[in-house]
Image (cartoon, rainbow, N blue to C red):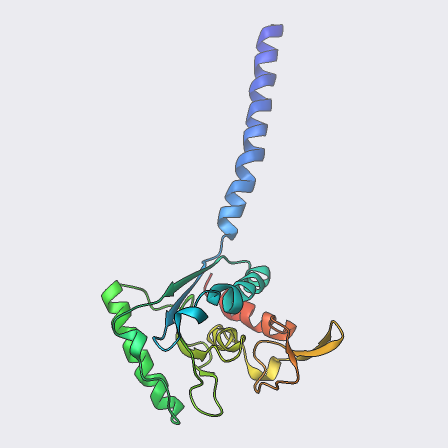
Length: 215
């Protein structure tokens, strides 16, 4: 009789322990959010010497910031020598026309690679020079294609922020480490100010709400 009771107790203990292990796993799986995928095409006008630290200088800090407040993994693929996209003629005064043309190039690439069009996959052309005298990059809010120059370290993060729903009106000028700095989606770059290398708190909220529509 004691052996039967001991066996029942052992089984009950085992089941409780198993539930304690499985329930957190099921909860974490239920809360797992769709990752963000960024495809970065390098324009052929970026020389080899300036490509060495592209990931660290322009993207690693942005990925760290995005992952910290979206709760999503961010995957970045740098594509250096695509035969068609690397030579795209990006300089223009007509940003709408330029954006339409770049989008057509990306659409063909997506068809070739059988890639999905969704709100968690973004395609950006990284260029050496500005688009024109006044423009470091362009896209549309919530869109999936963009162009950005390496002439400022935050141009790519600026355009990616727009593609994720962020807006100029929610940017901030912050005082950090003894000087003023601009958050990533500040509308105009002032050389006297430093880069904050983060999205503003308001844009973090806006981006998070935007992505909540695509769990």
